[in-house]
Image 1 (cartoon, rainbow, N blue to C red):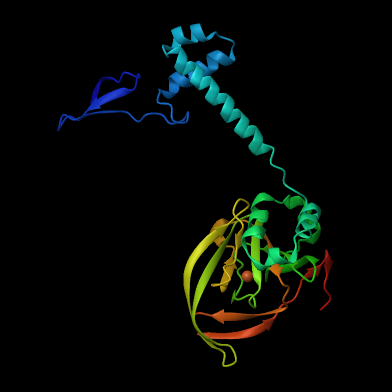
Image 2 (cartoon, protein in one colour):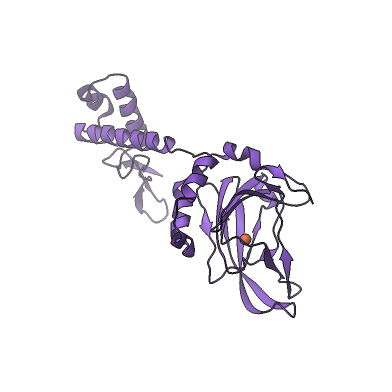
Length: 275
Ligand SMILES: [Fe+2]
């Protein structure tokens, strides 16, 4: 039941059974400030309309120091918001130009390229010339290739998934400029590639999206990528492989089998590959 007011104007309540009293949740809408949300909003509205701090203090019954702190917080939040919207999504041409600047040693470790992907969100519209879609299978579209790396855009229709595979001991980084994807990682307990037998077990699933690129762990490189039906949208992933490779091993956890396959591009530099 209601039980008066807290000194900050928040409602107090008392349990009818045990008699214990408590205060309604303090609003955290304004950082760490503890004050009623309606009063804070009213104060901001009054200040925006040109009301003086003294008048705002009288109308809202908030202390002037509280009003000034609120004002300062609004300025900080506005600046953060402005900076967030000012983050540049770079076109693929600039992305490639930056990637080509990295020295050879950069590709021998995973962190620097992963950080580059994190700090360099891609403008998905600039990928349009490279993207192809196939209802039967995801497509692999080559964007750039040097002796150090290859850069591929993979297009995933809703519900499509890769096989469980490795990367031939090469490093791999993935970003998702549009949509969302899951990466399911596997632990290989045993593999006999020549004999076609393996024992693998799923260990974890992580989500990739425009804010979360990832690097494949060189110590646990077996995984698959999927665009589950419940995500209900197409996705595009960008893959950096170093060094380039044109075959890999695919695994079946259910069958306990594995084997080498050749990899192909659907398009190269925006043009269909003739099969
Ligand atoms: Fe992969």
